[in-house]
Image (tube, rainbow, N blue to C red; front, side, top):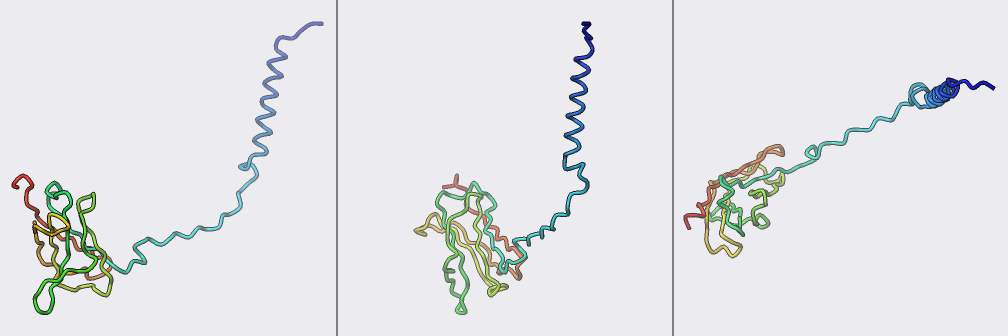
Length: 154
């Protein structure tokens, strides 16, 4: 019996082609168009439902913020006295700012100011901001700049 050296490679190629053709025949792409998917609604932006607006204390030099610095927002009374705003007191964030939320019932109120102390005990006042007005509407951010003393001057 004479052997044909080309027969085995030819059979292997034909088997490979048959497997490839079969896999293409049963793939989802060959089944035609996929059924339509239901549309996924786009979720509303988080700011679409927000009623308030922020006030932000932003020092001009983040390196001047002493560790443990304490901030207080005050409002001016009808008797021209300054009173602390309950809840708007705290430390600077790691990103070197302080932010508080203003509800719509307080939009446009003034005057307010920000105080920065060396610590929660409020022993030493480091700086007082200029007076400012709370945001006028929900897309209005009030940024209050403040200059703190250079720590190297102490």
